[in-house]
Length: 133
Image (cartoon, rainbow, N blue to C red; front, side, top):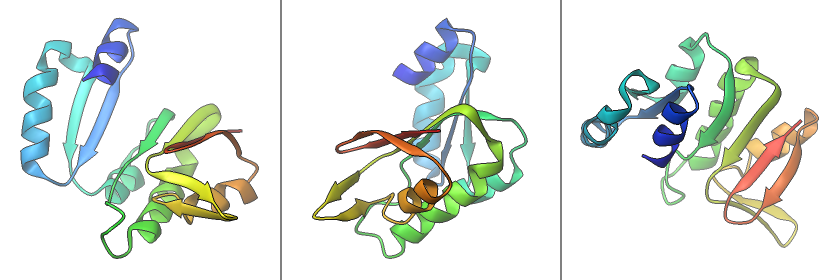
């Protein structure tokens, strides 16, 4: 809701992706006040990113919970699918991703090292990891 409000106020756009139709309906209902500034896509995030053709300014990755088998691999597939849509000023935020005892943990466990090898840098590491070029 807050990101939708910000996008609408700045003349921007928020695209949100979720596989759960209940979550999509809830989000559509509560962000309807922002008109065309917010659009919900009820589908798999990797498939959405593979078919998207517009550049991404801010990519917030918060897919599978860390108790779901394959969550880190899914997080890597998301960033691999999104890479072609990112530009020099893009930022990436991995939710539930931290650096502990010399290892990346959470949803970005595989995606963050992959990005670091491609020249991305961390701007913030905490409960969320924020990256930029």
